[in-house]
Image 1 (cartoon, rainbow, N blue to C red):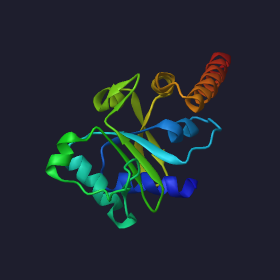
Image 2 (image 1 turned 60 degrees about the vertical axis):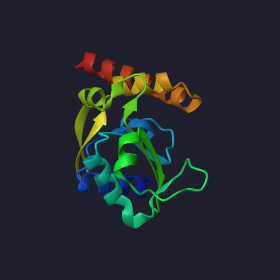
Image 3 (image 1 turned 90 degrees about the vertical axis):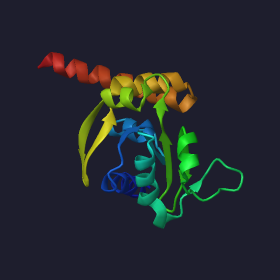
Image 4 (image 1 turned 30 degrees about the vertical axis):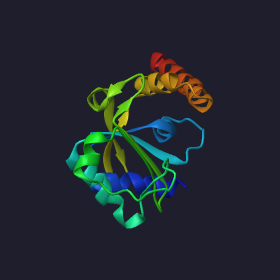
Length: 165
């Protein structure tokens, strides 16, 4: 499962999609032990960037996973102007693309609260721990609140270790 999620990230990176990693995979990056089965990103929702997302997955049968008939993901100019979020299922796995993050803000706000991190395939932005905690608290779902508890414990432990140095 993690290989497929990493491959989704790699494809976004290689397609030069402007995005920040958020959600469960970002939490795992910080040490949260909860399992995640998807990739959540906050992306710039311009026609050019949406086209990069479309091109990154066109060979993997992307479909809108929250529509009744699981319609294929095919962009039009009219659709690009209406989209706020994209929830896809692909042959690689699930990709959720958000234009804004509850508790944090739009893509620009999320990007300001992100930092570049190295992955095996290159550098990607990931939401900072404090902003991720805000986002998970704002979402308020039980699994998000479990992640918040773990993130806060990890943050506390990191701060303790810094104080010892």
